[in-house]
Amino acid sequence: MRVLSVDPKPFHWLRYLNAAPGGRGVERARLPFYRATLDALPDGCDAVVFASDLQGRVEPSRYGEEERLLGEAVASELEALADDRVIPRTSDCGVILAGDLYSVPGAKKRGGFGEVFAVYEAFASVFAWVVGVAGNHDDVRNVGAVATLLDGDVVSAGGVRIGGVGYVAGNKNKPGKRDEDEQLLRLELVLDEGVDVLVLHEGPEHAPMFEGSPAIRERILGARTPLTVFGHTGWSAPLVELSHGVTGLNVHERVVVGTVL
Image 1 (cartoon, one colour):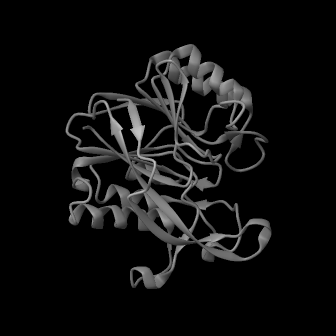
Image 2: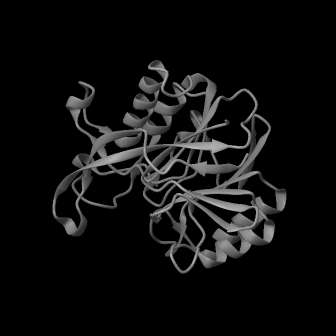
């Protein structure tokens, strides 16, 4: 399963609350939804949804309920779009989440660390399957009860081999981080098994324009991994060819709905 292209313009937006930069309170933001073209789909799927860094909150008035994490609202929004036949039925779609799905109540500040079970549960309740990795802001306790959480593992979804590693390299004494050596060891264990799709939170560098990890890039290119999905750091272009036949899909603060022509 490869991503051939991503439409340059969003087909849908979702309004939400986000923490303003520099601790300047809360700002209103819009999450873009893009269409993408894939060369193939997992068996039994009409589409695959990719997303990460859904770090915001949706106001109570949006759905007549209590304030919710942005990821919960995204799952509901996708279901509504499917009901309107804008996208395929969610029950015939898979989901790949690349981490950082938590926001503090009211989206009053950036960062934080908290439970994201509700987001995974919201996706799992309407989609055929959900595979994800933990971001450095995500408490993923109990997520395994409703979705497949990867951290040095490989699974098969409709015949597509998906491997993943969560968290980021950094100070292991802080939540959501671990030593770079351990992070890279987990990555190498996944790549040694051979995967069609690699899911990470922290992705590869693509110098000089796009930030990321040079060490992760080196290992992805060495393994000739066809598609790597990630977030953590925003890129202006969602889809980049890292090398011939090796692509990176950055879904930081994006929802991408992939279908075949």
